[in-house]
Image (cartoon, rainbow, N blue to C red; front, side, top):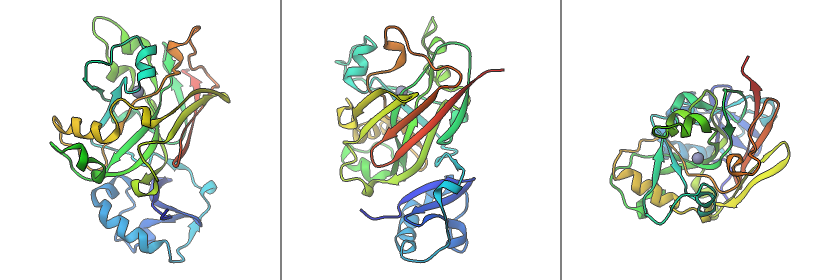
Length: 287
Ligand code: ZN
């Protein structure tokens, strides 16, 4: 494990998370790197090299608890999300996974928020989906799965919050709209570089609602693993540094339960991925 390759959005500025706390990157690098968190993904390799040397130096650090964290990917140019990417979730949704066809939609970037957010509930049926989120570190177009992990900057935790009535209303489902209300894409707490993981394809993932476990799985159970997702997306689009990919949710969503479990005012949702950390999202009624 090489400590120090976790980055955070510390009150709107790029922070490097070390054992000592959060280092202000713009200050510590003497302006070599911008305080703009989104900009770091354009220079990810250069930043990694600098961060490797920074870990040994005694830069002033703030305790993580004193920092208000924002999304570690605040303004991606594209947000991709994969639907029905775990067999058990596809089963609970009553859909066929034998077609070798990857389901893709977007969450508009205006839905992004940080790892400790209070989200306003729109009318309808708001549900949770714990997800591993990939953050790109390089461009990718028409690449093979074997090249894919090398293009990834790191991994973070995401919630694919979904208002099911908007998502599924006839005549055609509108996933993009049902999943893009303000705050419906919490991300964080940190982006952890790929080399920090012993096996980035097998991580515990889950979420708990008001302390009760709702989803609990492992990312190795994905139908399309991360490298395959990137390779397939790249056959159509050009992925750019700082783009994010929600990789799908395992079984246990609220809408598939009997009776349904929907998010309500005052609820606390904690979403976790092994080796990254947890998002804490709370909910309030629309005034
Ligand atoms: Zn999802």
